[in-house]
Amino acid sequence: MLIWVAALHCEAKPVIDYYRLKKSHDDSAFDLYRGDDMLCIISGVGKIASAAACAWIAARYDHEASIAWINLGVAGSGQHAIGAAFSLNQVIDADSGQRHYPVSCTSSVLPGSACLTLSQPSEDYREDTLFDMEASGFMYSTLRFSSAELTQCIKIVSDNREHKTGKNRQQVSDLIHQNIETINQQANDLIALNNEVAGLAVTPESWQQLIALAHFSQTQKNRLRVLWRYLMNRDTSAETVLQKISGCSSAATIISTLELLSYQDSEGL
Amino acid sequence: MVSSVYIESEIRDHPRARKLLERLRNLPVVEIEHYGEVFNPRAQNFRLQKKNPAIIIARKNDGHVLAAPKGYGLGGKHNYYFSHMLNCIYDCRYCFLQGMYQSAHQILFINYEDFGERIKQLAARHQGETVWFYSGYDCDSLANEPMTEFTDYFIPLVASIDNAWMELRTKSTQVRSMLKLQPCERVVTAFSFTDPVSHSKLEHGVPSIAKRVDAMRRLIDAGWTIGLRFDPVVYHQDYQAAFVNLLDEIFTTVDPQKLHSVSLGSFRLTRDHFRKVARLYPEEPLFAQKMDLDNGIISYPQEREREMVEYCEAQLMKHIPHQTYHPCEWHG
Image 1 (spheres, rainbow over the protein chains, first blue to last red):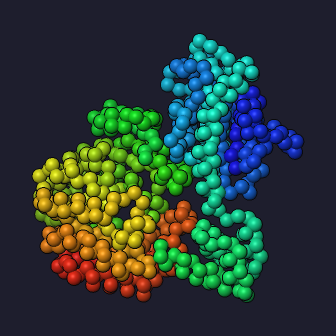
Image 2 (cartoon, rainbow over the protein chains, first blue to last red):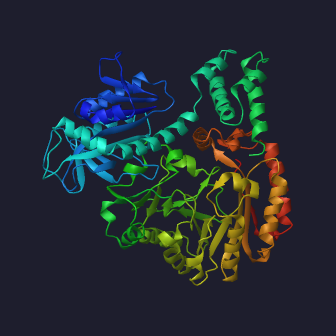
Image 3 (cartoon, rainbow over the protein chains, first blue to last red):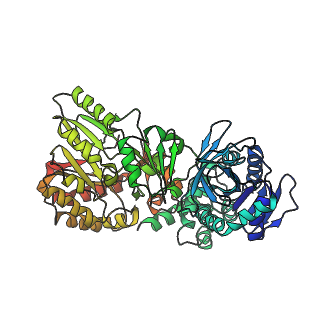
């Protein structure tokens, strides 16, 4: 599951259009758009709004094996041209001084930049960092639910010393739209990483099927999960394993049967 | 492949830092205050990070040289270890470094002089007695040598202290810089090997056995002191034949009489490290094998371990003089 977090509709629109996301009418706290294993939430402006939106959506999708996040929005810059796109490698909260470091595990197609998250708009630009109003709240919140490798911020320069386009909604959408192919590439890399993490998890369906077979103590459940995760990540189907333990009459015999299967499978490394 | 560089602002103008930045000039550089703010946060996925780790250039402020853990070493009375780097460029599935830190980024400490001062102090404290300094506990001593120039500083330092011995533990073939130096018999380059099957399945990114054997030969030819470390010995259905093949490959090239020391030990991890690594790599057969918990250490069941160690020792003794052998002692 990839979740896009944008402050404004005009920032989210290029993504909503590109991935053909549909507005959800089931939700009222935040505007939410859904697609195939993808969501886009409109948080509202500011770091608190961003953090609240991330926490709300993470709680709603806590059954997901793994969630990847992208904070997409515009930023101010003292040195970059309007429309330049960046993947943030350092996010600094201007109020608290707290710093976060999104980690890029792939060769990023976007150049990296630091970003200072402000509570109020400012045009007192610095040369070495972008200015925004959400990234630190986004990072603060999402790092509770996902690792730094699955948490990215993409910022497009909308304002600099010469030009101000950040208040023109259509121009904001256009600036993001101009970069949508690069943004998509970055998103695909992130989705691949997230799928790797999610693929290692035990699916809720198979887990429910498994623990319904006998009464397992918590210690036995822990051992069962380790064994099941191993076997399901090898060339073994759930059906085959379930068939092998179908005759077992207790939790202990199920575990010892699965242990035997694991030991046999691991003999050759 | 390295993804980016983090550097502590305070050391940006240090000559070693400047040299490193010049070498890594094509990578994005992020200035930080202290390496801990990147290296220590909990919300990091070691497995994902290991795909493209970053390099962190930092200063180590304390704990430069520490007492070696019990059982580590070659039986000397005074054993210390130090790490000019944290984490390793290689990705060996059995290695405790996978569970050691939150991050897979590689830290390069550049304040060698502070390490050197501490080494001198400790050697002076044990005047007249042999003191061992082990490098390669939290990293591979030589793997980043072209970047770190570790040997250029530390080998002449140890050579200048009469009672100091140093072990460089490595799986690398980066010996070119050592070949330019005057050999010192008190610097032991210890090459770690696992059998060919374990190497191909578990040692990701590690140079081939043949290339490492050749690196050993070049060092021996140049007059350097060499050690062999068969640690860990990993169980699999063909471990016996594979271990014999490994010994054959090594000893057709390396003269056993030229070896300073040889050690051997079976796979083991502390319970905490084992659990952490097994969670990171749930599909890894090494962690699905039958293991027992003994005194906080997870290792093979006693009978299997005894059989493996006895077999491998017997094969080893066909090649090496008995006095060079030091079994890894970790039980109890």
